[in-house]
Length: 118
Ligand code: 5GP
Image 1 (cartoon, rainbow, N blue to C red):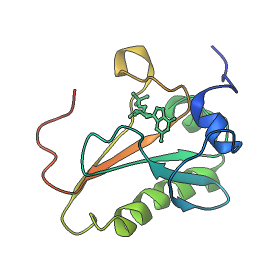
Image 2: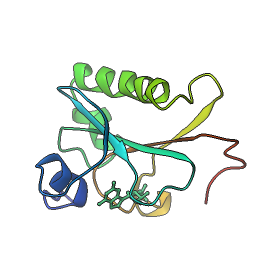
Image 3: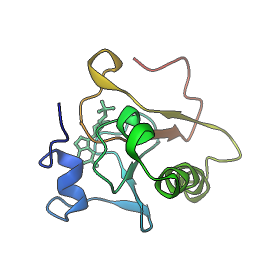
């Protein structure tokens, strides 16, 4: 299935839905999850139209991939979880439990995150 330009994160990127931004650069937007699973729960997304890690790994430019990787670390610093520790998750496809079909990394922390999330 191709990228759905009307998914909720595409709409956030177009400014059609508000978000609580933590970090932004030319390639990446990071914002607080609307339904936080932990005290810190930020979503880090590429601005390019990639459905999941699979598509970005195949079609993304190296510059975009590097920016996304670095943004995750910046978000950890900005949300003050870098030194205490945090978890990064990306769900891929149906079996991975992905709900929004635009690649996103969950950055979770602000206390022990415990065993793997459901
Ligand atoms: P997934 O299950 O696809 O890995 O995670 C999707 C995440 O997006 C969920 O944690 C959900 O709470 C979050 N989410 C869904 N809709 C919105 C929205 O409109 N705004 C924000 N900030 N987060 C959203």
